[in-house]
Image 1 (cartoon, rainbow, N blue to C red):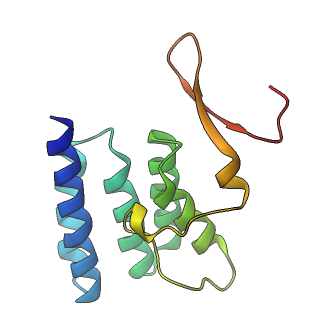
Image 2: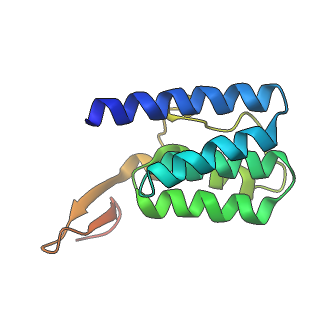
Length: 131
């Protein structure tokens, strides 16, 4: 089942990458909305919707969806990468449709790890914290 989910998300990421290349943003938003309904807890559709909104000039909605993706999975690198990129006054480079688009990091994100508490809630722990 998990492999089917990964395959579905890989296909969706590629489809939205193609939609963006062809400037078919409305169609892309529709595809992502369908995926969000089917996978409401998945970070990928939110990240992709953020990219689509950024491409159409809706920066506020884009940032909200990048944040939603990050909230759903704190370890999902494309959302963090896109938030950092688009929060810059002059974003450079390409956006991250999937993990393959994220450069290997040696910065603060590389020193993070996910720890689950007794309730099963995941917390991102930064290396500079003593706990």
